[in-house]
Image (tube, rainbow, N blue to C red; front, side, top):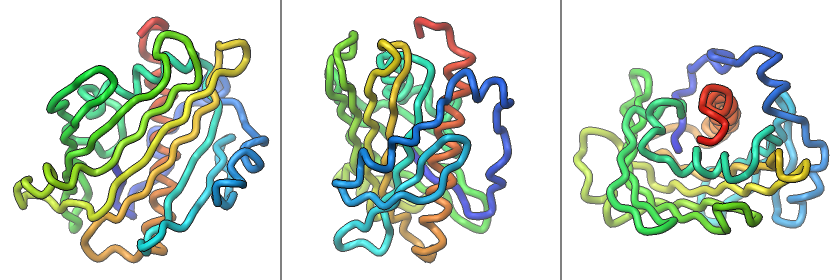
Length: 223
């Protein structure tokens, strides 16, 4: 998934309070859950717990957002791996095409549309899901930059120097809700200050979670 230009208004497109309560439940236990992995807890926004962690060899820190959704893990998994639909609901994704798919593995091209004066970013990622997608838990999705395929892209957009992340989806409430954590590390290329970019990356993962909330509310229950 992508990231947005620093001047984006974070409040745009926020769902109503009623919809928020239907889909997202606060998760105060998140801070202890990832303490052993080096994640440092930060602010909380609408029940979303934010974390940061240094990445060896990079000036850009990784960020993580944890929340709880009122839908089973398998339903979120289907949404999060349906890359051909990302341009319709994921913030800033202007184009998302599956280049090949084999089981739970996919190679995906994406282009992010950023506001002037910044140039768009584009890249190719390799994504792989793990876990039983028909009910067994937990489920996870990991992706990383496909450096070889990305190097072959045209110069019509900037390619990031690093881009990787994952989702962890664990069942709760008897399998009717999901404990979800979304981690992301990006070196966007260009000349964005690292200290400013990581703050905007935190804002971006919040926007992604809100976009998934809206997606869950608009898709049929078995989608």
